[in-house]
Length: 455
Image 1 (cartoon, one colour):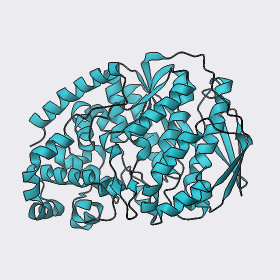
Image 2 (cartoon, rainbow, N blue to C red):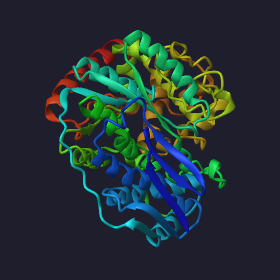
Image 3 (spheres, helix red, strand yellow):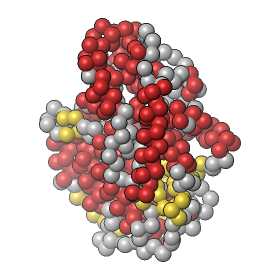
Image 4 (cartoon, rainbow, N blue to C red):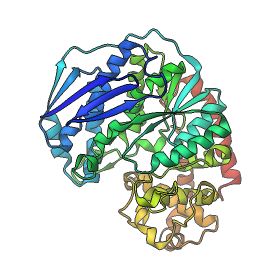
């Protein structure tokens, strides 16, 4: 049996598991200024969200919590169930086995009464909080919110399992603050170690990571309250809804917690916690990955130069913000070459389109890829990106291989691919008054992009 204890501290929440303490810690007085009843509700829900996967990772059949039964237990259940096929595929285990063990889990609470939120605050329609990671998606979200007058405040959740990420992003945050006058509210999330299989002694696993965005939305509620922010904004772009089928026939969503349908459920959670005052949305939902990259670096180059999409999980990323040895670095390099953006502008200093990096691209049969690349959408995105890099004059080894093997297909499907990847897709997470202003920006910029930057 796993015993989980949660308690409030002066700065946030502490979770105790197996004799060790893990924290969710806010800066300054953010936690103390959040209403007391809401702190209690967050305690119940965040303790549960941070630990419910542990039974699967540690192969236990029972979990005992010292908290009340969480209000959002059904939300966490659906989020996890929909994430299991992707976890199983990455971990090379059976989806059916994970689902069976999860369904048979015995979960008990010290108090079965569900504590409900009581909120009396107000929010301002021209204030927002961005979950900023310095990836292209969150940077474009920041830039768009700034342009349409949502006065974005930025917060960053520090994950200790990402070995060098905090070091590089803290340096970027200092520069960002000096240039734009924006303070980055850093939330220390050592509770993230509870989904780090290496820390837990069982080896690397995907189990637990699928609740990350859902958990972050709840974590950001006290920050939103401190700024009277109407919106919590995530960088969930169109391809977050992509999926593929695993060998057992289950649909795999590489990032279900970032999909647009699930974002609607997360929005319902933040609204319930705030009596309708705090909405959760994505302003980049209408765009595919390659369009996000293009709009960011062509319309907002001052913001785009801060991009860091690499997780810097290995020693290769110790002294630089791109490890230059992972599928993320390879993909970002390709997208920039396709769009006529010089990769060195963001610190991508090495050619990632050489033959030794073939394994990072599913188009060539590579297996060392992010799971999104296994979807049909991911494969076609690479097809178009290599085609545009070829049109831009890149003659790296992989571009030459593309020319030999796939140039005919790309030319035949060019109109279809451009329409798909540079089109504006119908959003469902943005309120109407926000949507009209955002889509106006994208129509203008994508027209300019295709006329001036894309061959």
